[in-house]
Image 1 (cartoon, helix red, strand yellow):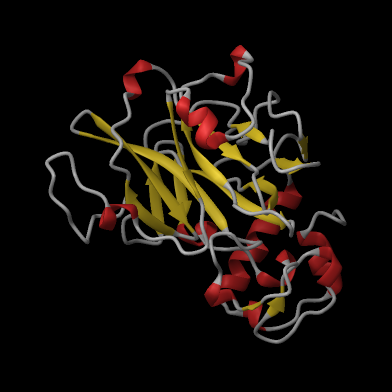
Image 2 (spheres, one colour; image 1 turned 120 degrees about the horizontal axis):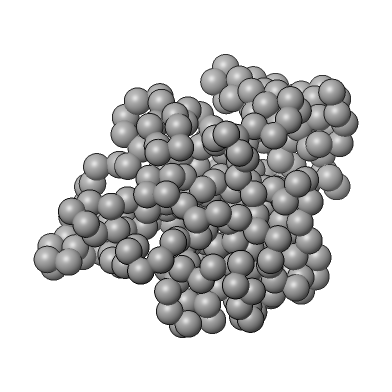
Length: 279
C-alpha cells in the first residue's frame, strides 16, 4: 500500500524532506500551508506528529480539510485561518494547548446539546478504516526521549524531559501543541451527512458542527505549520516506506506499551528515532 505524503505544492516558506513526509517551516510564521498528496476517504485518518517547535511566536498548528485541489496550483494565502477558511470549501481549526471536545460545546443540527458521543475510534485496540486496520497505539504521542529538541536532547531525566521551551513534562501530560504530540483529522459520513473529527493524541474530539458537502469534491487534508509549530511529520498508518520507518514506529509502540519511556534511552536509539543514523 502506498505511503501517505505531502503534496509537492505548498507554501513558500515550507521545505519538504524525507520523501515528502516531513514539512519544515524555514522562516517567518506564515506561508506554511501543506496538503495531503491525495484526497482522504471517509473514515481514513490523516495523522501528523509535531517534531519541532520554535519560541517567539504566538499560535500553533492549524489542521483541517479542504476541497481546493493542490494539483490546481491555486494562489495560496498566508494562513489557513482566517484566509483559506474565508475562501470557502475549507474546514479548519486551530490546535491549542487547552483543547476541549468539540461535541461538548457545539449544538447538533437539531439544536440539542450533548456531553457525550460515540467515538469514531471505537473501544478496541484495533481501529478499522477504509485503508486498513490501525493500531490505537500509533495514535498516541511519541516517546518523550526522542521528541526533545536537539539543544536539550542530552538532558534526559527519569520520568520526564525538558522541551525546547524549557518546560518539564511527562509522557502522561502531553499537550496537543507539544513536541511529540500526534494530531489527526478525518471525516465520517452518517445518514448522508459528513462531519469532521479531530484526533488529539489518541482521543476523538467529537464531530464538528459543520456539515461538509463531501459530494461537491474530494477532500484533502490541509496543515498550516503556523506559529510555534516548526516541523511536522506524517505518521504512516497504512504504508511503510522503509525498514527504518517500520522499526522506528515499532520502537515507539513498545516504549508506550511497556512504559520504557520512564527510563533514559541510549544515545544511539535517540539518534535512530530522529533519523540521524540508519540501519
